[in-house]
Amino acid sequence: MRGPRTGARATSRDVARVAGVSQATVSLVMGEKWRGRVSERTADSVRSAARSLGYRPNLAARNLRLGRTRTALLVVPALTNEFFARVYTGAARVAAEQGIGVVLYPSPEGVGPARDPFASARATLDGVIASSMAAEALTALREGGLPLVMLDSDPERAEAATTVNLDLADGMRQVAGHLLALGHRRFVHLAADIDSWTFRVRAAALAEALRGTPGTELTVVRAPLTVADGLHAAEHALTRPGPRPTALVCDDDVLAAGTCKAARRLGLRVPDDLSVTGFDDLSLATAVEPELTTVRLPAEGVGEAGMRALMGVLDGGPVAPRVLPVELVVRGTTTVAGG
Figure 1 (cartoon, rainbow, N blue to C red):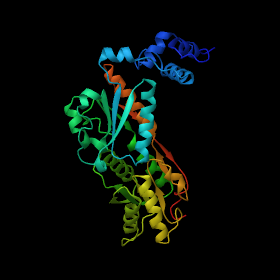
Figure 2: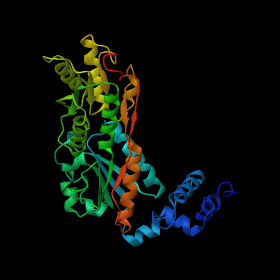
Figure 3: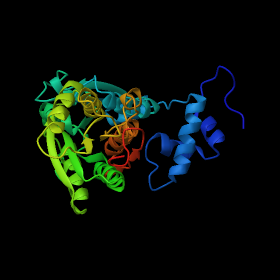
Figure 4: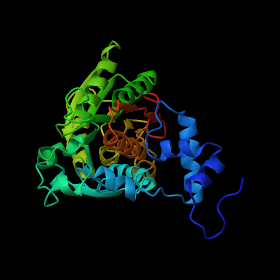
C-alpha cells in the first residue's frame, strides 16, 4: 500500500493504511492504551509502520489538556556503566515515539542521596523511572508525589506504581545447571559488594541451585564492581588453603574479566583449569579471550518496558509488574571440570 506523498508529514491515516488497521487502533497503540483492546502483534505492527513512515503523533493538545510536561526522568547509578546506557537507549526509543523527552540523571557515585535536579521536580516532570541501585537518590522526588516506576527492584517492597524486573534468579539457575552438568562441585561466588536487591536475588538463587546437588562446596567472596577489585578478590579465592575451586561464578562481566586476569597471573588456564561465568553480556564479554560465558540481560528491553509502564501509569493504570526473561550464553570460559 502507498505511504504519504513525498515531502508530506505522515498521518495516523497513513499508518493505519500501512499496518492494515483502523485509525482508532493507531490512536490506541500510539497513545499506549491498546492493552486488552488489541493484540500485542497488532500493536507491534502499528509501531513498525509508524517508524517506517517517520510518524510522530501530535500530542500537544492532549498534553496541554492533561497538564503534562512531556518529560520523564531516568535515574541510574552511573553513566559509565554500559548496562544503564542500554537501558536509556530503550527508554528513549519508546519515549520518542510518544514525543516525550528523557532526562538522564546519575546518583552521585551510584550511592547516597542526590539533590532534586530541578527547582521543582513536580512542576517539570511527568514521572520517574529508577534503578533500585539508585533508590537513595529518590528522596526529594518521592516527596513531590511523582509517578514512579522502579527497575530491578523488589516488587513486594518497592514504593512505586509498578516494577520492571529481569528474571535474575532464573539466570543464576541456568549458570548453576550448566556448571553442574559439566561436573563442577567446588564453586566460588564472586559477589558484588553492593547491598542491593538485584545482587541479593542472585546470591540466594545460586546457593539454592547448588544446595540440591550432593558434594558441592560454595564460598562467597565480595568485591566492588571493577576489574582490579575482581582480580584481587579472585586471586585471594584461588590461593586459599585447601582444594582449589574449579568454577568462579561472577555477579558481573567486569568481575569475570578480573577473574580471568587473576587466573593468568597465577598460571591457570581458563577454562581448562578454571571455568568462569559472568552476568550481563556486556561488550566486554566478547572482547576477552576466550570469550565469556555469561547471562544475557535485555537491557534495552528493560528501558522500553519501563517507559511503557510509566506511560501506562500516567494514563491511569494500574500497570502490572513485569518480569523479563534472561538467557545463558555459553562461550569459551567454561568446560568440563578437570578437562
